[in-house]
Image (cartoon, rainbow over all chains, first blue to last red; front, side, top):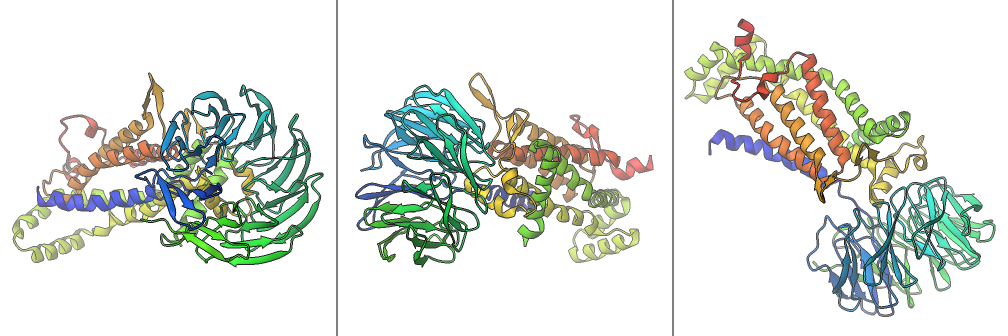
Length: 358
Length: 261
């Protein structure tokens, strides 16, 4: 080839690399999510879904065999009563895996966008929220039963009272749809996007936190607002409840406890960073992770029992999880040599940490 | 630094335009592209002027005589070229410096569009940190990402007979090719490296940008198309568009010869 052409190609290639680099930097991201049974934790943690032994912290299996960094897994994996592990990916596919081996049972490939939220398994059905604005209802073999098209992307897992399915959208709406037919029962407009999951309460009420910074209680019969309380900033994940009280965190690092009935504030606690995940009611205490990479153990009266800083580079966006006597936390944003799953004992000491093998 | 100076202000201006026009992100991208091009227009005009002068110079008899005379003595050739630049008052940086200054602005625009679209939880969290406090971020999210037939946060396809046709990627490739061809300065000098580079860019850039349009969110494609059309319009306003370059079999008309006629 002519030497001048080689020089020009040499000039062109760096340009292509720079442009590609910019584009690669646009790859969509999220953070890990997890579930567990008596023996194993299941973590959707980037390129793989990992099964990790709860006693030792050793990897049991990982899925898929060969990963693609462009198509990670960040939706919460869900164990079904009939022994499936169901998880959606950024590759627009919903997978049913064997929890013992990680082998694929079936795949649902009809969705047009990524799965950010975990599925709901109820009524012997799987309800899968997708960013393509659709809620897909499948039977337990992955066959599509109905599709409900909402106004916007659905990022959070749905909730159910056995009759209806409830979920929020980025379009600031909460929907109730009939669990059997997929027909809309009601729809309510709120003050901001609903990024997390609604919580079905014990008194036929539905609790929803919004990106507009409000905690709502809706009547499940008609969607009307029973009460609403402002937070100090946006609320990402949904609230949790111990039956009497509600606990929710906001972007300013405030952990707020309210009465589920009426929404009166009981106490609030300033933590050291934004609270993105839901608090975990882990045994007799609340466990909360912050963006500053700190795990807090707090008793139900609001007293901080323990503060456990992980590292300055790790962020805790994932909701912590109780697994037997352990509390699991899934940090993100660390180096490739940092753990992506840690098991803390009741005293807050690290029992094991899981660093994905190469 | 890059975030503070470029990406954050760009994203906020883009969101301000979006809010001002009532929530159409496609139109906001187009208006923001026009705004950036207007701001950088003096740089572009300076670049065009420099390129034209360079073409005229390279097509001149004096320049070509220097090339022939000192073709075996690179050092002497460089000295004579510099001497000639001084004689005719030409600054060799005048054609490339404006382009170099524009590159970071283009990258910044590109990143701010993707930042504002916030199509995943991680991106939304970053956007939350990017938006200035006087915007109430809860009011802005979600952006209305629907524009014409597109979801600006997703790669575009038009489905016909079960096949997804990437219409926008094709338009991006065509407009990039047209822009490269009609704005390329004519040269009759077979050793003109600038012209050779231009020819290569006319082939590779449509392929590269077409690939990006095929793969990435269609908001980026809207930006590419708007940028290409505005670029052609800017050249046309300065009287530098050569539509004949699109016709097959057209030989280049040297700038100097045109001037002499």
